[in-house]
Length: 281
Image (cartoon, rainbow, N blue to C red):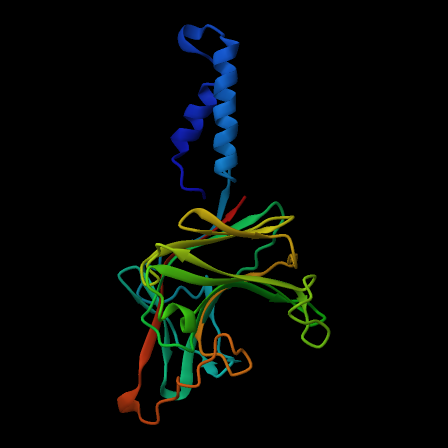
């Protein structure tokens, strides 16, 4: 839900009903209408939203009624590690021993309908080049084609960043590698942005707004990108992961990130989640 006290909305609505002393003053009312309209434009979605999902990770283990844990191979990574929950934080891990990573996903599917907003407060770890931390939707149809919306952090970019936050944002619609390519905007769209003045290792609030005609991305409650291309339309689960891609994804891959041959020199990296919330707009 947009970061706005409910009382503020009612106070703005009140000025549309009466003026001081109950006397109608249409010039006064017109000014308040203008202010209210501008307020709504600057705060999309404030007209009302319904919370569909919320997890603050307050338990000692992941709530398996809400979440599933991926156990498949992704890039060079064998997924299957369980997140570590402590003091209200879910830590997704990657270990160089056998290249083991973590991915969790909502048990529930969410449909777009009038629009949904996926929000998470997250923190990147001090990860070496060659890892990807992801916040994304993902689903496949009966024909095997996939729909997806991404927020991805490539440690190849973030590990050397100072006072800026590099992010890769993407949409995929009916994606099938056999019949589409990355330049086909009907099936894929992406942009790379770098937000100056943001510490990449600090906590930030990330949001995806999946709307009927477009997708919007927010960081710390500010709109940073919008796309009308390759818009998904299938009901989807929401995923979070930390993994190492293969050389086929040159933008994210690093040949210097190697598996540890001995458990005594296993290195462990992280991607932390404070809370996750999904709203109907």
